[in-house]
Length: 147
Image 1 (cartoon, rainbow, N blue to C red):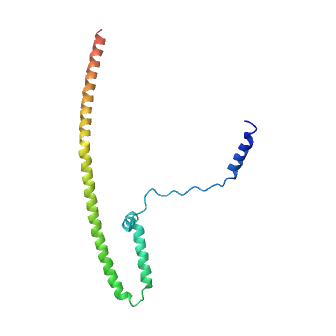
Image 2: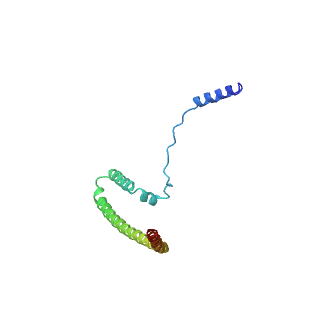
């Protein structure tokens, strides 16, 4: 190293030592942010239930006590109807998902059929070739014994 390069290297080393150490960035999940409240509820169903309970408690605490009787009965009836509707929709969605899954399995089976046929033919030909090789090996072994 020449004498002219040493001061530059010393300055670079000093700059590296004095550089602030930055904390590592927090990694974000790979998912895209939810597009609307339905996709958010689909991704985080327990968070949705907890938010609903919290909102219900907040609204219940703000209502006057006299109004709670009639309003509470109507709110309970509305909540029951909403729960039944939710159950019906979830069953319907489950049936649709099951049907889609069965359709996908059927398509995969159809797509894999030619591969299974090729594998079966390959297995049969490999077995036949193995038998031919074994037969020839036996012939050679008997010739060798006779000789």
